[in-house]
Image 1: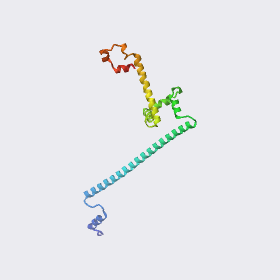
Image 2: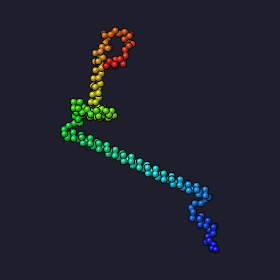
Image 3: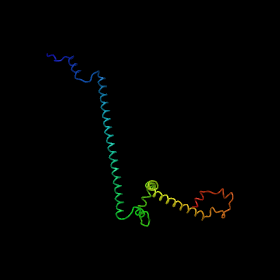
Image 4: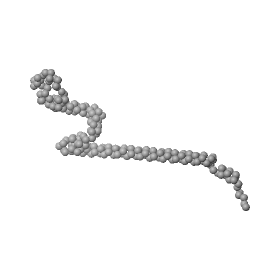
Length: 187
């Protein structure tokens, strides 16, 4: 009968020397679980960093494409204005053409007015962010326009005779029954 080359004590020493995990069975399980959890956490952090980098790249690309699209649009507008000038026309002539119903450009005219934000932006730019001369012309036009509306309403009230004292008896009943809303309804 042959005796083993290593006895059981020697095998335990060899196993202990070659194994990086030491401790009881429960401790080794806990260490393996902790190591696995650490690797999962590291992998999640790496994946999150990759996703964030991809998101930032996508945002940057989208912003770049948007900026290029806007630059292309403004370049096209510049070409149109240059084309008008080269042919001896002005932008104001184009606006008058589009705005005059006689030229039947209703769709183009409607596009100006249907987008309330663009229409308000145009008026605000003319009224607030243009040259002093332009702002004065816009203000003068606005005052004249409002004055003509008020004149129409005044003429309407005058023609109706609603406020003329010689058409009605001025007494407490007339004064107490007076209403601006009823006056507005007559306009």
